[in-house]
Length: 187
Image (cartoon, rainbow, N blue to C red; front, top):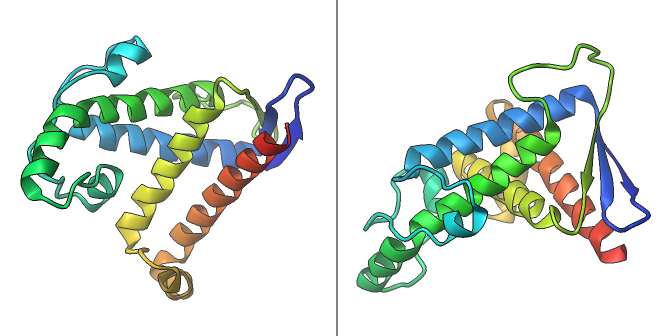
């Protein structure tokens, strides 16, 4: 992964082919997870999609979804009422963001014919929020899946053969997110 500043602001994210494929697969999995929790079809207009009203009464049972859509209030009744009003709009926003990221990667169902070629994505002021929100959602979902809740969990999970690879992907996503945010601060 390499980052290059763009003259007009923003940055160019250059990923090796394998990195781009991994990121595309992760975002596709996030999209599938979100769609499994969605109760409506996604409106193609991002504004209307994010304003969609609706949602469930309870915190999702899936730990990744529960991490992505936590209770907004301690009181169960207030949390349930708020979730019913806002959850579908939040799901739709995350779906819109994920679709924007996979669209920017440009891999789709096909792979590049030259597997040594890198993939370059311009992350502009306009597209940066979707990238930041999607990378954050990926990290939250991964952390929930492997039980990474505290800083002390990181070293333990990294030492375990079963979770080492996933923790390394989690860290790689953190590096991309950190780099995008730092580059944004300097531009």
